[in-house]
Image (cartoon, rainbow over all chains, first blue to last red; front, top):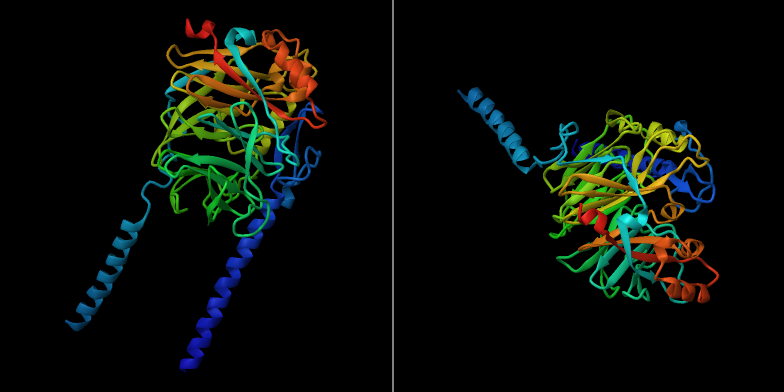
Length: 67
Length: 397
């Protein structure tokens, strides 16, 4: 009886930890897809790219469905 | 009797737990949720425009000199401490210190994922109590502390990412935690050990998040060493003292502006800005005891080709008067970042642009220095710092 109780606690702990990890990963993925808006002086226009760095002023508009 | 005793003991336990939870809570969190429509301390009404040289006088030009192998092209934050200029390029993840002649002193932080390294540097501030620079990483959700000599001191991990930070005189850190966090608030205050001590500017859960810090919205220090914060699609600058956010500057204009009640429609704001349909404060402003100096993007003029019309605005706090620069191609190039130290305002212009406008009347008396910059020009573009003083037109107003 005691061992079943311990196993149950372990299972619940794994479930809780698992759900936390999922939430953290989901946040990371969505953060990478969060559009970063900027002004492009060369093109004299505004643009958004989908990562915070590395894409400069590429005119890549994030789709709402991606986030 | 026994049953009653057990029942009341259970009730007592629940009541005690509730009392402890209540006492341990943070009563100041979200304290400003009903302040959106409050009148601001100052109304900044943007209307008349003047020649740049009538509003600001050029005190000095500081061309920056980098160590071999260092790169710096996209200045975002500039902080002036004593004779040292600290400037951040978040794209290259480079935070550099320069002396008052513009010579590079050192680089802060090393790129990497190690315990003393930075995955990126989204912003930085200065903790005057610890005399340390505080660097924020948006990817790692951390704050790293470095002494002014460039030595790593410590790093703290945080629950939320931050794209902008500021540190007050007590070491309290204000962090713009973007529109993607599970606290559903745009500004977090944290102690110097990383504990969350306040949340301000709540937003609805269904918001579509965009990082707009390159266009509008800013976090800096006020002249009272409190925080000044403007949400990206809002025309109100709040002063935040840790427990309360109070509207300080409320921008207004005869031009169309983005409605305050739509401040959480970030995509709608961006779409309007990108079409040139509205006037709005840009991403930089700084305040001293007498003035607020700010960037302003006027809505597209009917005959203009460009959808942007950047101006520099100066608000005189003693008279409540606002001065705006006239349309000027030079002003398009000196939009920011900006910093303030006493009565001097610091702006940044790229070296190529400075040379392009070398014959502009604003640079008269600096021909020799600009010629020397031209002669020593390297292959890559570099920022140049301009120190400016509010001109007589305003001070005598």
